[in-house]
Length: 136
Image (tube, helix red, strand yellow):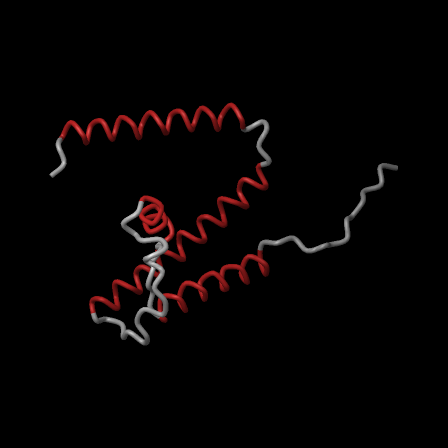
């Protein structure tokens, strides 16, 4: 049972930390390489989306909507459990599962491969000849 005081303290900590991070970001934006920043955040968003998709496949398998092709391909819960702090963070951000099924792995890797192919196809600039304008 969560006490309302703990809820208020947690909310205040979240708001204060977001304000501090926003100020740090605002002050340091002059020094940040925006191309690199957005490239890294794009990769993180891709991994978050892949984890969300993989987790949804896990939930569909548990509900019996999708068949379990092969359960527990590997089990690394003794190395990094979802009960640990790092495992909990990885689970909530990236859909980390220490013992995924075959379908979860296939969906995760297929999603990442498809996104990489789409990014390379539509968004990466190819070495195109530069057109120079003569100022004559």
